[in-house]
Length: 562
Image 1 (cartoon, rainbow, N blue to C red):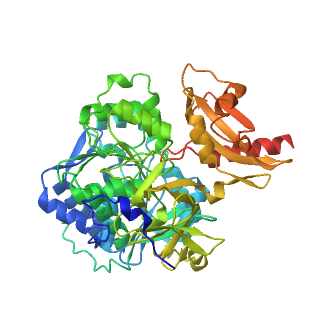
Image 2 (cartoon, one colour):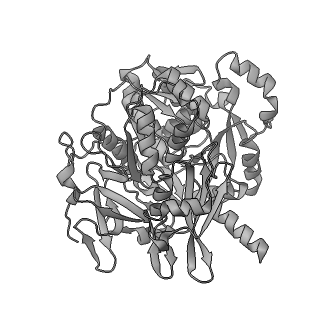
Image 3 (cartoon, rainbow, N blue to C red):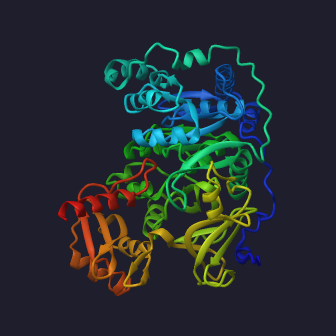
């Protein structure tokens, strides 16, 4: 296939596209940063702080303790934790043993946990004693192959007097842990001298992480990400944000580390660059604004719904957001109006990026130098090739404003799906990752996502793209949140439906909204059904608006009326 790098005409002048990032084993980042900044703050969790020396010592002790429990190359170890120091320590300790990390969402239902444990061959999981997490995992000891659970006491991460008060006031939130061989307390794992020699790693081929995803098709699959996949993506980000200050900046972590976007752009990037991580166990709007106001972070990666929530906060003027230098939106398309409003209110440029779990995840980002185009995912990262493929013509598209499927090739693209060669073959061709997303170039080579192939709505045979409708609806000043998806219709096959939450104190009717949209979308794109909701629209654990949940509700409601 012919390669025409149409986007290189607009590449930032001080970044070499073909400058291959140096990459190796992930855990080497921690050892290097510890040597450079041993006494600097590495982690700030609810006011309790850890230095890089403390974190690195803890990682070595956990690595040795895990190794003494049989953890080594070939073993899969789960992490089921919210953002906290335990996550960072467990993640790097597992990798030092040569084993593979398997990320688990703490909010998974029992069925989801069981499926992933069996599919990934996870025999040991590291978690905490919180009631919202532990009881589900305890059941897995009897229902699945899971053999042991390492318990990290939540109160031990808290500063005084929060740790004391938590144990008294929140005792109902803490699980009782059985005293048996299948439960191993964190203190027991850490009871050693910490003298541990990391496993010999082949960074190019050894799998550091199994990250589960629905992928571009079908049921959840474990994307096999090697050490090089992960470190190359971090190095690409370092080169892209070329003026970051090593060892001097602060990173705000409100999206969960178990999601690949946060794992790369917050956790691993911070360890690589010696940034102080300011973390919360879950996103809370007021707490997030308070942390920005008082802790003064420079980096704030998040999903569009979080930036939108900040825009809508009625007392935003009471918070100082001027410390922010890098606000990076990922995980979902960034509506143009959300970007515009956030930049206006914060004074910080909000940069949209793009990628998939299968690309570790970052493939494209808007540049910090030159045009930062609203609605665009920007340009490919160094050593990343992004092409648009025309399935009808069986060729790549090399001219602007023609749509095709986005294909990605680069050192961050996964090795494949765990134990699923047929599924791998569907999405990897000639080294390219076929994303399932439809995009186009503009005249400057900037890439724009039109929509996901699977989200396409077929109205009387015509292609309708939900994102285009959402962008138009977000322009209405009364709209706070919006999701558009296709629902079944007897006459047209499918029709667009819009779910909308209005801003506080605002009103809007179906007819008023449709009148507003008349000159912004075509008649066939006009939502045939509109549902206004008083409560916020459902979101995933990372904070993305959940189209899946809304469609499930729609299907259940439809079944009840049949």
